[in-house]
Image (cartoon, rainbow, N blue to C red; front, top):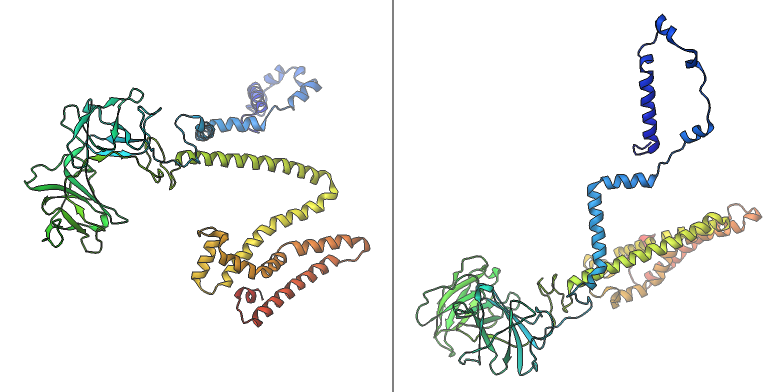
Length: 524
């Protein structure tokens, strides 16, 4: 009996009391004459029988579920996991109701009327079309001739200053207004005539526009881009020689130390090699720097071993500040950020929302399937248990449903193994059948193979399943009243013979057609 049983506890107390009372009498086997004289006749009388007390002594209030729950709650790990699971399930259904959540099926696009510029401590500016601020737009724009620009800078920059200019023009200061609904953010309306903007701190000592150049090589396309927006960490290299441009260069890791040839703008001008030095400091992996002659600003970049080459030449010159122009297209393949916590997929859908949406769908399907199984299972169980005439029907139905799915799967696998004569085609076929190929079951090659071998697959499916045995059992039961013993076995044997004969006919037809199907011959 369980140690948590109430009856066990009461019985233990009673046993201890009796043992304590009889302890003096059970310490030794024999009594002295004085001890025998002290015994009274009442001690040898039969105890009165009480039927109610006897019934009560045999009663137990032990509960299996209460005992199980009590043991469960004593397991701290199990209770912790249960609480975590309940919290996750609850959050799954509350997540769409929380603020700043996205529709999981919504294809998010960059904002067409505004941009957001985020500046870090080093003066690196990141321009984005993702809406980082809350609420409505702080100012109205037409989306074509003017663009609303939000700027966020470190607190120690104070009240920031904004400067705009046209391409190659002179910068002029514009007003930066603090956004009351979004602390730490400033905004300004930028004209399309002067779209180039940079930010400085209140004291003018820090800025996002530097007298240097940052050139990057794309790892996939090998395209080369140039910018004067800071992309490295730490202070800039000081003591730049006169007539030179401080140039930073980023190349993919597989390129090794880059080889750079500098030449003038005019075609055919003399080229000279520029030695780039690895840039030290955290966050500067893959960056190199050099002082490039301003008269030889065209840079041809190749990898250390000459295997890779930049698609175009980089330009080592101080370019215009950040261009404030609305971004277009999907917010695709974004890294996790404060807006999209888990990032986005190829078409800009929020992965955080899609994860919880998938969880809700899985829970809903699980609950519905469990409910259907419970209802159908209880009904079938009741009919199967109380209506004896349906026992045979349900037994055979169970055998058919239990055998056919795995039989078909095994037939498809066997057919693939013995149909293809080379491993390459076999691998492609398996990839198509099990959904690892792009086309899946919609592949025309797969459909053609299935159509050509449909009779074979159908006969194998029928012959390898429980259908012949089921048919033989039915015929045997129908003929049992006529005392025709063994008729079911005879029917089953006949169906098996027909099955083998059909396979033989198919093999003969395939052989006569000068075709080769290893699966057919394997069956024999």
